[in-house]
Length: 318
Image (cartoon, rainbow, N blue to C red):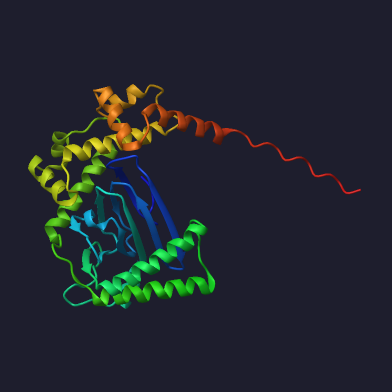
């Protein structure tokens, strides 16, 4: 679990590798802009209850699904406070996420036929090309600034100018927007919840292999219901997701200094009985062998635990 969105727990499952991700966060008083790029991955999160989140795919959006909604060109995904998010893209992508206080949503105009989402809601908008391009341009410029000082907090005139530009561009884009085709609706929201619950079941039993029949028993749904939800929201099968998620959990375990010394034991704990195939699948996703991941984690732990050399005492002035 990580926090690429401030205040949200985010679960990332790489789909193909080697996995790479880069994030830049610019905080602008009560607003924040998060930009980043990632190799193919699935992301799950429950967003902060007090934040409106606007998502733009700057590149690679042709295959991006947000809560099962195809994003495509000039589409903006809007999440109300506390909404559940599932992001899936089988291709590398580049995105921008604008976070605003829910109270600020009242100042963002939207068309009556596609209103901004309320708490825990999700809406996809199709903005005009001109308005979307302007918003994307400002997001990229903010990303360039953030790259000079990662995780910076901008203040003063620079922060006010960037904040005003982002908000004005967002207002224009939403005012020009129409409902995106194929909105998920209530059935889509239920499928998103089910997909996130599957992740919760896996996280609750990290040392026990979980299969589709286990999920059915734990969640009280049929195998068909789970398969339909995964096809609709992620564009993949439960079997493939479970395999990828178990690989991600093994990867996280190997990076822990206190993990068991035998990689075989960790793999078996997570349901990988064919160790040769496990090693191949792991390398395909993470670009290295399990042993290499473990070795790097041990080196990092030793370096982190090494005491720093004492600075020489200052000499008294004559």
